[in-house]
View 1 (tube, rainbow, N blue to C red):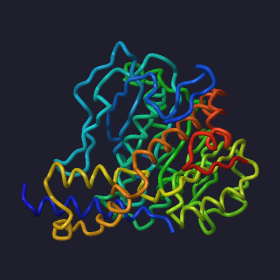
View 2 (cartoon, rainbow, N blue to C red):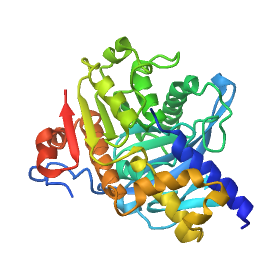
View 3 (cartoon, rainbow, N blue to C red):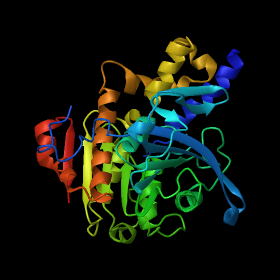
Amino acid sequence: MSCLSRKGWVAVFATALLIGSCGGSGGAPGSMVDAPDAPGSFAVGHTMFTATDAARGDRELIVNVWYPVDEADAATEPRAEYPLTGPFTLASEVAVDGLVVSSTGPLAFLVFSHGFGGINTQSTQLMEALASHGFIIASPAHTGNTALDLSDDMPAEKRVPDISFVIDTMFERSNTPGDAFEGRIDESEVGVLGHSYGGQTSMGMVAGWAGAGPDPRVKAIGVIAGGVGEGDFSDEALASVTAPTLLLVGTLDPGALENHNYAFTRMPNAEALFKVEITGANHTHFANVCDIGNYLIDDLGIEQDAWPGLGAQALIQPYNDTCSDDVFPIAEAQRLQNLYMVAHFKRYLMGETGYDFYLSSEYSDANEPAVSFVAQ
């Protein structure tokens, strides 16, 4: 592999990680529910496909899907290889390609939206965690607003319609005889979550955004370090939201922190509203920045002093801010991300009230010293 080919990939992904920026648990009572920060009871399958939206000029979206797998159908190979660009992939330690979707169900369905100019495999640990807890979760690459393609100069207008189209597509697959997802999706249990610009997209699914109205099929949302502040959503739009909403952010992400505080005070009609702040976490604690940097160093043998020559100077600062030994551990940030997103969607899509235990300041005060938790 030539340095030139490495340079193209590294430069693209370094930009993707940055451009998205926006200005062990205590036990549950008895054995009521599975701990949301530990793997769930399902094995995890993975697949990917391309969907074409004929109603929008044959717009194509590459979609990755993670899903629960019954124990009887579980396997350890072939491990999923999440595409980055060209021949480069990141190997999963959990998900396996091509397994049979769990026959339990129908199952709750989630859609994840990536950051501005990012990739749809930016938060694979969260995707795998949700699938292990019984969710089918799809993540589209927003064409024209990805690491490899920033050609769309009006990407906001595509975001909400993209997510609605993914919902349409997966519902159609669930209703198609012989499809791998036939009969597997509960159309009454749909949620959306996303990081950074994807968090803004998630809010747009229930508040409307960039000319698109809300999608009434979306029953709950999760916003991770999202652009949901003044200038993004009007007071009227935020007040219109009734869907249960969880806002998660790091305290070292000042723009997103301000945005979340703004939205939290303007959503009086949400059925449930939670604000989770993780002390010491920054914007990239909730994505795969360390996996990518470690891949450069450990797998390709490219140390940081060579990164500028490969076009990856922009990756150095977020990698050091997020992945060094003297900062908040990314594994802990991602454990907390899993804990709160799993608990939120288990409670407000699946109706499992045992997860109320985790969605409380009493739990965080007793068990999670890095977390500031506020419920409306």
